[in-house]
Image 1 (cartoon, helix red, strand yellow):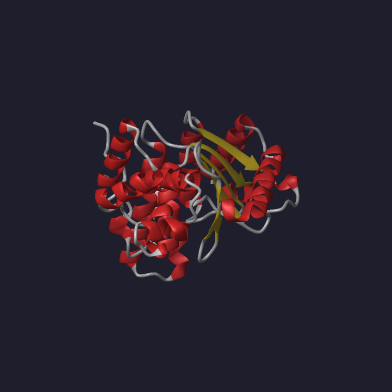
Image 2 (image 1 turned 90 degrees about the vertical axis):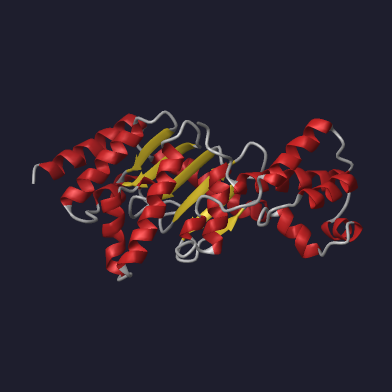
Length: 286
């Protein structure tokens, strides 16, 4: 059975279609909002995909933008009806910041995901035991830890376990696969999971060895999301999280170039899996 389309994806479809239609009509956001007697902030929320769109509001915009093709009208009306309701991460609202929720919406729609992490195995690749051990030093309430870990496990399943998902190129620093988070047995199980992921059709797992030296992103992790119908998006992972897309093309281009450099410096896929296997074997002999 095919799962229903997440409301965030319908909001994204509307966001792209309506923004492009407005631009084709030669209208600014302020002009379009005035024509349909909306506040400009309401139109901005629609065009950023942060709110659902009623069919009546959609029809007002389609009339303004002269969208008349019957198939497209039907498609957009169906998207408007499906734009309401909670996204898959909504049950975790107590542990998901607004910024991260917005990122998860973009991640759900991405067709490619390129990520680099210099310190630990990133959240969408973690096993439950590894995630719990990683969070332990923060002194969080046990229930909050469970909620955060449950979110990570569901995110991982959605990304890798289904028939659809992004083509992922995952570059981990050698330090990330050697740091004994949770001790030898927890790390060994985590490395076993990485080996399984490395055999996935949509996954390219690479290790950046210690011998690679310095590069632009030595001090931080980042994610690049790719879309067939929109600008790429950069997500910088730190305490507050930070996203940038077409509004800062210079920074986006810098990290795209950085990722190309990192992948050039990284071990090949076979060599990377061999290294992970050797580390895993060494842990098992203790």
